Structures are given as structure tokens and as C-alpha cells.
Length: 118
Image 1 (tube, rainbow, N blue to C red):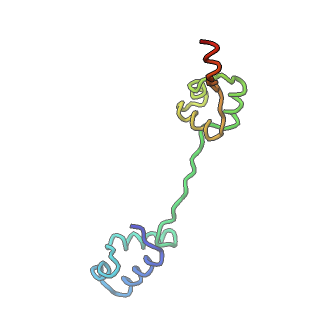
Image 2: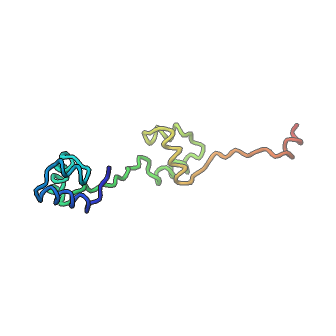
Image 3: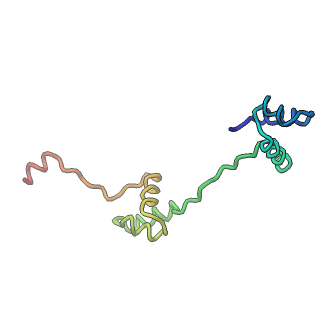
């Protein structure tokens, strides 16, 4: 359960004022392990709660290189692009979708074309 920074500070101050861990559990509903973990975080970071680090994914497929590869050979297969960028065909497909790049369009036959060819 995630606790607010102020809540953690009040709980630690409550324990530091001389109350037992049993009383701390009754009043705040936390165990001694949480108390010691919060103290350790305070010593290391200056905050009772650890700061969350946002992770950014490194894209394996460079959009400029992908666009130039498609311009060079417009009828290239996804598996060939996957080999070139050393990744899966699914990754290439998803990257193309993100960049809104489409190619190899299939033209649907209209009813008029079906009657004249049939």
C-alpha cells in the first residue's frame, strides 16, 4: 500500500516520540519493517518515500533510417527490415504504425470491376 509522505512523517514522529511498535501498528497500521524502511529512505534520499524514476525506452529502430530504407526499396518485406534493424517483424510493424508509414497498399476491387472481369 502506498502511503503519503506526510503520513509517513507523522508515523515516524509518533514512533520517535516514545511509542512502541505495537501502538504504532494500532494507530497507523504499519509494521516495524515499514518504519525501518522509511528511515532508511530518509537517510539515503531525504524523503520517507522513494522517488519513482520514470524509465524511457530506447527505440531500437531509428525513424530516419527506417524511412530511408523504405524509400530505397518501397517493396521491402517486414522480415527484411527486421533483419536490417536486428529486431522482430512485430517491432518493425509497430514502429511503422507509430510513424504512420504505410506501404504495399492493396486495391479493393469494386463491384463494377468484378462485373467487367467476370
